[in-house]
Amino acid sequence: MKLGPGGRILIGMLAGVALGAVLGERVAAIQPLGDLFITLLVLAAAPLVFFNLLAGLTSLADTRTLGRLAGKTFGYFLSTELVALSLGLGAAALLRPGDGMRLTESAAEQVTGPVGEAPSVADVLLDMIPSNVFRAFGDGNVVQLVVLGLLLGVATLALGDGPRARLATLYEDAARLFRRLVHMILWTAPVGIGALVAVTVGRYGAELISPMARFLAGLWGAQLVIVTGYMLLLRFFSDYRPAHFLRVSGSLWATTAATTSSLASLSVGLETARRLGLPRGVYSFALPLGVQLNKDGTAAMLGAVLIFTAQAAGVSFSPADFVTILLLGLLLSEGSGGVPGGGFVIALIYVQALNLPIEVAAIVGGIYRLVDMGNTTVNIMGDMVGASLVARSEARRT
Image (tube, rainbow, N blue to C red; front, side, top):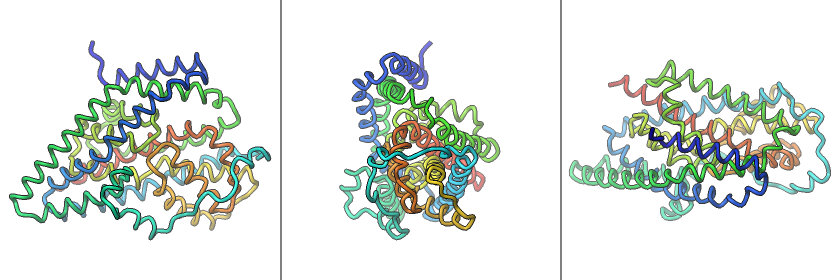
């Protein structure tokens, strides 16, 4: 029987688990294999996002359709992030992982001084506009590429039929080229993902029996509730059944958990959306934008880290404080980069902005790879479910 991509990746993951368990921290020698896989996916992500978006936009009837898509997509993003942040806060408040935790002097010495500032709404909006096209591609800044693609897509729709058709063909051919590149890269996925899993098991396996197990249980429990909510939305408000959705997208979740990089996973996500049969005009817009603006897993993590730190420091919040906590958490979750560890820096800024000790970095930072596995998976799953819901809503209009 011929194995599909999901089956080959599963075998690679199981081999990685066994190798990590046997070799322990010595398995770090194969880390470059995993890093190479992530680098290749990130290499393909920027041009794939850009040309897929342009090809999708030029297939739309007019700019009014684009405006309708944007309204539905942003409404979904805001609603699910508020729920996710609240669940993270609630899970940590319920399990109280910070009770009895003492921040030692040696831990405090590991993180000193300010770690950054919370961005203003104006800063977030201005940072979405690329000042240099080549720099946006070079930095792999997905949200800037989306904005550039939107502007060029609208300009293409405004052209006459002849130029519009020629450009649409060019965009489609370029998108097909980079999809082929992603197919080639995915042939290395069993080795790359297997290496990443092996290093994670070898380096962090023992942490699962440490006092941080309660923190991880709370966070992963909150993220599991979020995933359950996604499946219910799919069941009742989309054309997909949860079992079919998870089966077709299995290789994507292996990639998100292993790479812990939303940007690296985006290439696989776009291909998965195509295999699910989602309209390109919807997924080529929603998925890249979601990588930057819709991070339900990261939002849940921010809430859990904040409450964990407050408990460890003996600080309690009043009901009125939670308005500020929710608004700041929403703003900061938009600022976490789609790369491994990006959310941790945002967590430090979140803690510092609310006048809590950032010594939490010495505790949560030690297991952040495990934390980020759930963050990235839920982030990307939220984008995929959102695209499915918007696609169903648009189909009902026709």
